[in-house]
Image 1 (tube, rainbow, N blue to C red):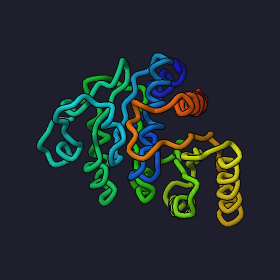
Image 2 (image 1 turned 90 degrees about the vertical axis):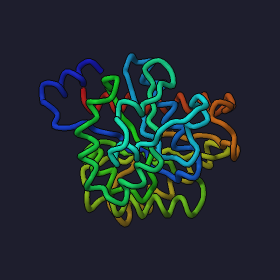
Image 3 (image 1 turned 180 degrees about the horizontal axis):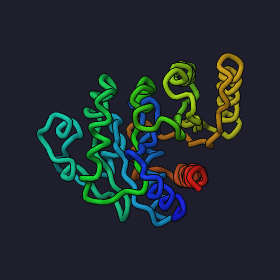
Length: 252
């Protein structure tokens, strides 16, 4: 990780990179994966921040009280540094459901946000954002050449949406690597089956290789992430470790 940070400094990276976590934001799986990634980065000694665009997601983990959305900053009503919420040591969240929805409809405005992330109250080693499947144009503004994480559920609708978005993303970010995490499954075999179907279709019609990132078990509807069971915690930490290792190797 130290080599990665040194390299970015030496190269004078033009602007920050935000790793997209794309999925169905009416479900909590993308936010759940984002939380596990923040925890893993903290274990590695890194400061990380998640722009959370999910419907409920990490709100279950944020202290009660008013929290301003990223939209307030985009509209010039709020300071960016006032929006960050400390979840735990080295783990930060910016509620961004409305703000990321607005940027999804106007992705050309994303550089304005990226150019002002230095105003955050903490210097972040890693930045992430939970996005809807259809936000591939915004994802390409956030990360034009890195790795995108896709949270796919074992339903025809989810697989179809993911495939369509991966197909569309090829026209704007051909150098992106796609890592698929299958969420909401009852067994390893079910996860393998879902990924194999998506991988086969993507390779046959698009010629795009996909990386398998692991799986997450079922999260009960309406269940707060803070009450996730042992199987979810074990699986989430295992997947997050693999994701963070791959991310650091990409810059090593």
